[in-house]
Image 1: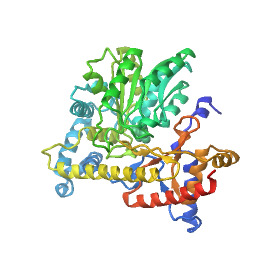
Image 2 (image 1 turned 60 degrees about the horizontal axis):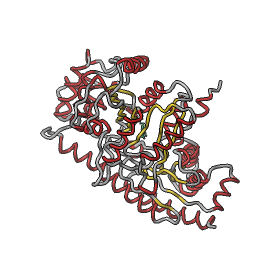
Image 3 (image 1 turned 60 degrees about the vertical axis):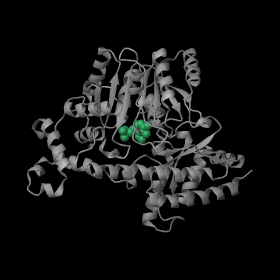
Image 4 (image 1 turned 30 degrees about the vertical axis):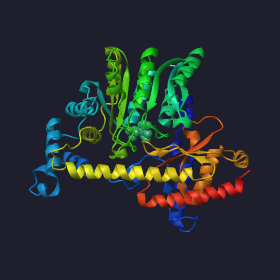
Length: 474
Ligand SMILES: Cc1ncc(COP(=O)(O)O)c(C=O)c1O
């Protein structure tokens, strides 16, 4: 049984290079010394805890108490858990009928947790949020699939997507049988998003009979790491309103900003501050517990906030959410904590801030260190990682390397990444998995390896690159 849409779908961040790395890891375990390095350094995927990032204590305390409520009745509880966690867990449990975290919830998620998220959105944006607009999901990925399922009925339905893009989008559009309409981010201007490019691609799609339904914007960007300016966001909102496009705002990296001159603004805040209300623009904002300083990828929590849709479209969204019954309850609780963390005046506030800021400042240092290392390599240029968890350097590969890749029946960027892995154990993802301007070659490297391993990543990469260039320089 082979379904065309499934055959079409690709997911590079867990692709060929990673499979090879996993094989090598097993070989190292069975036969230490079988490779020129003693460990594989995974820089391929935005999975922070797998690389040693620690969970936020308050979040885990609340989760533990919610998962096992009888702990709250034990005498020793006050010595084991913080007062704030006990208070928050008790509040949450009161909102769950029978304190049953093992039960299904409302299809959109527990109402009181959605209330907490709506409050968090309001505090973030200074504009109100409605808990009925929030759908809790098992991470952002199922939310994206759900929306694509509703937007796409035939291959004539197009979705404007950035190139490079996070392959969830290309995969989801392929799985649902739609057409990805690419718009290229401008590498020369720090991965800028030009409205003229959006217009050009929209017109070109229309001339091919494609009906473009939505525009995907990933901010902060993956794999590109840029943070959009407020002015640019305003232009995007205006463009969507003019063209009647649904704006799909992937805002999962909203807490990952590393430069003082950039700030995260949600697209909902931008559109409301431009005076646009429900009737003016249809907007979906995706958020996740997987990223930020929390990084709880395996807990599978997130939500989408949908605004500006008619009652019948909302009904369809609700129906599809109901077919999936509900998202997992721990993920729901975490999403409420992420959007409504400890506040000034809470006993735990200072230690929570210290954990949060410690993680974010370390990520910023790692990003800077890697960016400088890439920029020091021959034929490599790398834009600033302003946010998210990735760098996407461009490598000008010599003709000889391109020929060697052709002979090895692979793309030049995959050839480079494979050689890098074989020589050093460093795992990065070839740019072709995200899309890139034809004839340019990139790879994506996460900034997530532990800070004390970054010098090792840098020296392995640098030595490899020098040797590679010596072998293939034209
Ligand atoms: C831009 C972007 N959106 C969505 C996701 C999906 O995250 P999750 O399903 O874990 O929430 C990711 C994961 O890396 C991502 O980078």
